[in-house]
Image 1 (tube, rainbow, N blue to C red):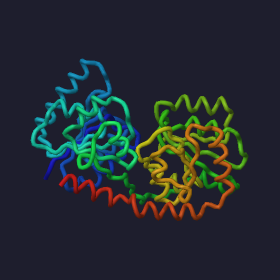
Image 2 (tube, rainbow, N blue to C red):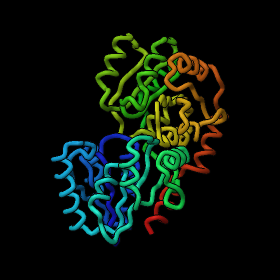
Image 3 (cartoon, rainbow, N blue to C red):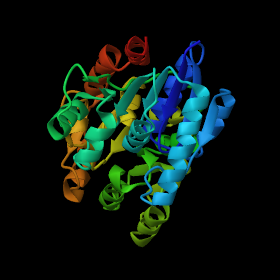
Image 4 (cartoon, one colour):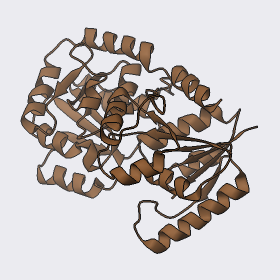
Length: 346
C-alpha cells in the first residue's frame, strides 16, 4: 500500500482542513495516510479514522529556533516513514518539504486561495511540485503572480459530498413558522470572511428577518461585541457545527461576505442542498455564482449588502436554486474531485 502524507498548517476549522478530511476519508482504504500539522479541533476526526498525526510547531513562525526545530523533526519523519506521495496544503509546508529534500516521492501542492505575496519563497518552495489550484480563479492568479504554468499547474475544482444527517433545528423552524426569513452564515470568524460587514448590514433591522451565525475563530469576541454594540437582537450566534449541510439546508439564504477566497466550499454546500446564496462579488465567488444561480453584492459594501438582503427577501428565487443545483451536479460533485486527485496520485 502506498504511503501518503498530508502536510498543512493546522487541523483547526476551515475549508483547507475540510478538504484534507475529505481526502482522508476517501483514500484511507487505498493508501496508508499520515498528517502533519500544528494540531487543532479536527484531530478528533483523524483519530476516529485511525490516521497517524505528527504535531509540529506553527510553520508560519519566523522564529529561527522554531524553524530549525521543525525542520529537524520533519526530516526525521520523512526518513522514518518513506512516503510515496507528499501532498502539501500550505505554502510554508511546501517550503519545509523543499528544504528537507525528500527522495523518491511525488510532490503535490494544493493552492487553496489567491495569493500575490512572498514571490521568491513561493517559487523556491513549489518549483519541484505538481501544483493543483482549487478553482480557475486561483489557477489564473497563480500563473500571473508566480509564473507557474500547465502542465505543472492545473485545476481540480473543490467538490462536495452533499449527503448529510438531517436533524430539524427547532429554533430555526419556529422562526420560520412565525413568518421570519432566515439568513445564515457558517464559517470562521476571521477578517477574510467579512462577517463584520454582514452584521453591520443586518443591524439595519428588517423586523421579519433573522440571521443565524454558526462558527468560531480568532474574531469571535470581536464579533460578539459588535453585535452587542449594535443592539442587533435579530442576530443569533451559535457554536461551530459538525453538520454544516444540515444547517445550510434549513436556511432560506446562505450569506458569504468574504473579502477573498479560493473556491469557497460554503457556496458549493448551499448549491448541493438547494439553498439560495448571497455572496460578495470577489472573482472567486463569481466563478460559481451568477445572476442565474444566486445574488452578488459589492464586496465590503455595507450599503449594497443591506440592499441585496432586502432584494433577496422580496424575490421569487426558486429558479435560481434549481439552476444552482444543476451547476453543482455538473461540476462540483465529490466523486469527480476524488477521481481527478486519484489520477494524479497514480
